[in-house]
Image (cartoon, rainbow, N blue to C red; front, side, top):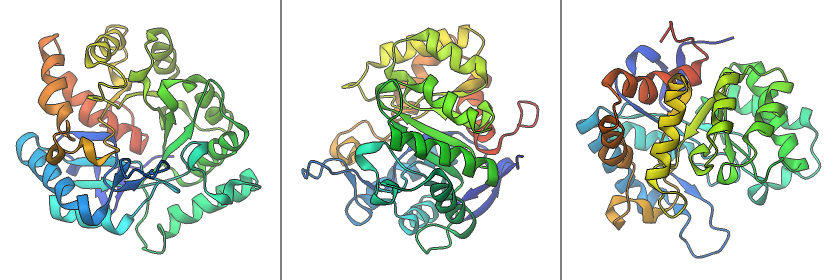
Length: 315
């Protein structure tokens, strides 16, 4: 089951209207402040104007057309704020539902069955998020940490897969530091979800080309989605890993993004910003031999195909 219509925070959007690149894994509003230091926060009031300005500037300079915003339950999600950012920036935004990895699980996961969790997700997908009527267009970032998901993470992933199968959406994962992606894919596909409806997250943090190739060969998308986060991994390593995936014939499975998840990453605070992919990383990829068709594949067509389930021929 697939459709070439996207569910954005401002309404349905045909994939044909997305003429420019997409950021496949970002956060525009979130609160992951477990430490209480205020760092892992993007507040709609304090930081929303800077976020909006960055997206508008990227639309103007690079044609940025779409952001897949993967802030889900327990991460400080704010669909109304996302709609305002989308309207004011002129960049379409797809919102998400699901549960992040275990430290951020909401109390509802404590004893809930997979069936109960699936019902929660399907209801949000069909009726809208948090009473706003704004429908999510993706399940994510559904998380786990370590080489195997924990028991609650397993239930969360299974519920996401079932909800995806029921509603026709795709699933984007959070694989902590890139680990456990194969186990995530095994769980999701065991529930009947086709691999091409899955994006395995943060694979640019895992220096293991064999894993990337195995994920891609299965048909899943491989997310190089923390570009510019040099404290986690150098862009030199990211570029090497991405080129290895391309050379293995899997460019049609790569997704690219920056995963801005702290206000300190914003340009107004001297961070790399949402534009690091366009300003820094893609020029290096071009210098390594990537042509414009390959760039378009990885930054526009692949995200659209991931979201919709469409084939290479359709988009």
